Length: 217
Image 1 (tube, rainbow, N blue to C red):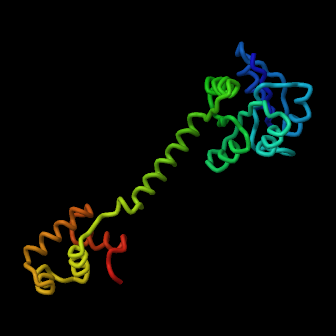
Image 2 (cartoon, one colour; image 1 turned 90 degrees about the horizontal axis):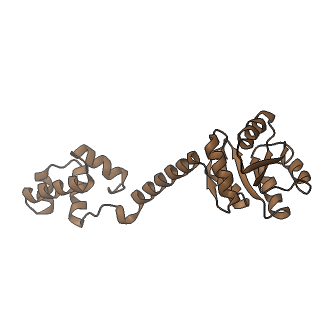
Image 3 (tube, rainbow, N blue to C red; image 1 turned 60 degrees about the horizontal axis):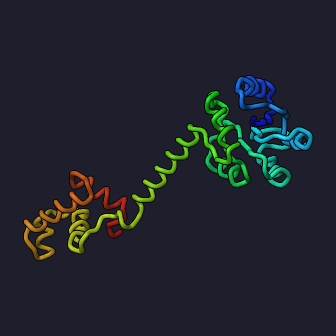
């Protein structure tokens, strides 16, 4: 039997959680509190295995309570309950000692699964939070890869020369005359520039070059 302590400053939330958990044969709600201070006062006489802890509460909020629980009851498993999805807040709570994080809109099955998971010594993030963090991680990695030097296009010295002259408004023949080469060679380099940058025409090529800092001021 897993002993669960409910901590939330809204009675209607505690009522809903109690109704969900009392229907489970292996879970027992042993106590309730409306803030962290009440929890700390009751725990010595009402021991629990898992505390389902609200984040935003008066007197002593979820983060401060987590710090105190780590000092006073280090074996107690802490499952946070909130509507906040900000990764910094979640990170602070996990670093403080919380073992899991649930959104208040989690369904019955996920709440029960989370309690069993943290009681078994595991960590738990509800599915919605997991998706939010994954999406932000993927966006961050994509931006990082796009900005990394190894993903920047490599232009030869001659291609950079031609790119600069194209941006200056010179025609292929004028560029060829200035660089003492053939018009056909200039056309080949311009085609290479379009392929390397992935753009389709000269205005787009110049715009790309300006955005990437490839042109002399």
